[in-house]
Structure formats: structure tokens, C-alpha cells
Image (cartoon, rainbow, N blue to C red; front, side, top):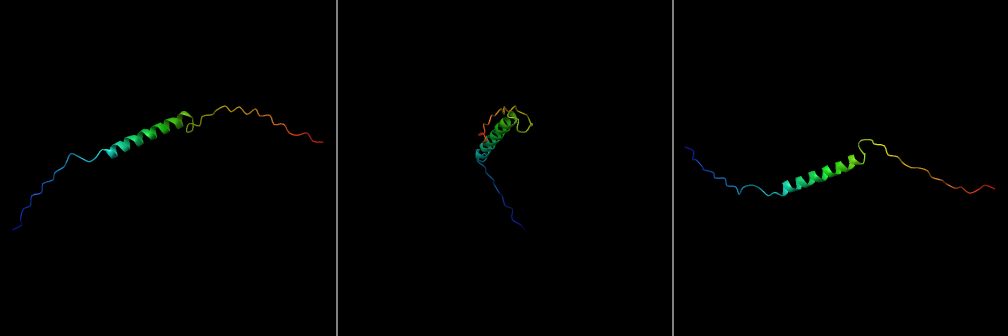
Amino acid sequence: MAEEKEVIVTSDGGGGGAGMIMAVVLLIVVLVGLFLLYQNGVFSGGTQDVNADIKIETPKQN
């Protein structure tokens, strides 16, 4: 006949919280980056006025 074995699994309440902290920090960095890009109109195709009044003086020809 087969012998019965009893297995007792104990846990200290979970792993460390470093992975969770890193995930939250990464999420905040991504959200701030997207906010800044959308604010500047990079993804929205926003147009910006560019003042291009440039006067270039060329030397006179003899």
C-alpha cells in the first residue's frame, strides 16, 4: 500500500514590494512623458506660427 505524505507550505506573507514600486514609478514616468508630448502638439499635428522674417544682406556685385 502507498504511504501518505503530508506537505505543509508556509509563507511569510508575500514577496517584496520592489516590483510594485518600480511599476508605479514607470507608469508615472510614461504618463508624464505622454502629457508633455501631447501638450506640445507632437501627436496632435498642431501647427505653430513660426516668424521667419529673415533679412540676408548679400555683397554687391561689381
